[in-house]
Length: 170
Image 1 (cartoon, one colour):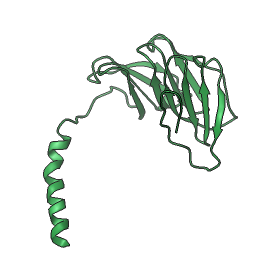
Image 2 (spheres, helix red, strand yellow):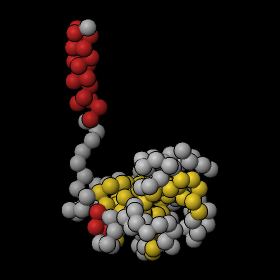
Image 3 (cartoon, helix red, strand yellow):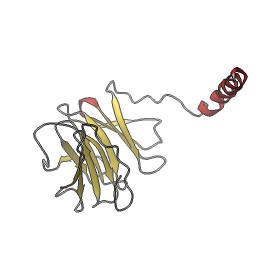
């Protein structure tokens, strides 16, 4: 058994440099902690984080531009349906929307509760978007975020992880 464990460890140590050789640190030129990233192409993406930071890259992450800084909310998740339409969600159950590739962001209606955090967002199309709250609420919009409906409420204190297919969630 010890021989088997040694062989597995040796194999893992041998493969580690090979598997991680394509990873490198990307400088975002911000001191804010970042929580999520969403790419719509191999070049175009957004990242969100603490103190309301929303950053954009158009060169696969080689450089990042701070597009928005709304200090009252930490954004936890970001998702874009296209190169122009996207959402960011976060603290105080806030939803931010853009249809201008992040040049302009606007708050969408308050849809749920008095306190908490939206922890995940998934934009399936420019009309269909899903949002998850930290207390297990799963919400859907089918009109580009103009209205939201509670689709399911998880009864545990563990927030669901989101996996969105074309027409549903898990």
